[in-house]
Image (cartoon, rainbow, N blue to C red):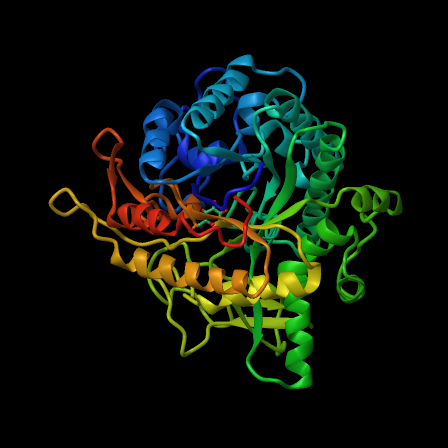
Length: 471
Ligand code: BGP
């Protein structure tokens, strides 16, 4: 049996399901954040979100009518294990069976992420990703999911964006538990990677269960010039942004020059020797790439490490540099760049460059573009959303992806972020990414945007090509 190129779209549990206190679901760190934190600057919650928990059948029907043949979604850990470990919640298990069955009935291949940031609150209370026990609890949760859904799901992802999520939680401090501490950040990043490797170890105990990968927020790094100092800065940025995740998952080790450099500033004794075997046996079958933007890098000048973020939606709300890594590099905004209202640079060529780099470094490994999209302010006008900006963004990025594919990168699928409008974390609901508009004011009514039809027609007109993949 051959393999089809997957054209789909993606969501994540906390961002869209709602039903936060239904059917035995436990609390996650995002419930705690959205209900109680003063850092929740947009003052909204995921309590109802896009109401996907109750409307998933309608959403899946729209995917099918939109020509999509795959759906990437995540399982909410607190629905399966309300306390993070221990007692299993059967109603949570049943919900994802219903969702997966509905997808399969509609000819849509499920691509399932085990952790997309909704860490069970009881685990956070015991140290969260700073505590190795969380990694072992994750492996146990993963095992339960493999044994429940493994005969139906053939594409699995351990963790969504370990780099971006952990630096937001412990570096920028805008994600719960809202910490700004480099030492704690690096430890949490390490334990998250350990969790992924432990889950892979569980996965390998099953047969006929498909493939497992990780989803990485790829950020190709470009220097402001070609000087020796800048080259060092670019290498360090590439280590922290990309290699920290890709090297252990592809080769089973962390980059030595990164460890040497970090050791000058941080205590790395939490990286236990006895774990190195776990990393070596925890390498993955494919890489999921979320591509949004690139990093523009110059050498370190002065000051303490920090990370700036724009969750306000007011253009240029962040100062230069965007990020400082003491002694290593600074990330800045390219003065000539094109930016969204949330200061994300639009840089389609980065899609090509990042895919080419992966091919150079890791050869033929299968790659899925697990997220690509743009957040915009949008309003219904005469019952329609004419999101030409999104169509422009997606078509340019898909073109770059296909160029990389023609040049030999083993790309097997592409997913738009997002299937429909949803909770954009600290940005709330005004930053919209969906192919389908959700009218949050009117009973979560679904209205396909212009981009939904554009994507449908694009898939249709390209379905006859086999993209180099056996049909
Ligand atoms: C990725 C996440 C998604 C999604 C997207 C857009 O990092 O995997 O969950 O949210 O980015 O980011 P944001 O919603 O913060 O604009």
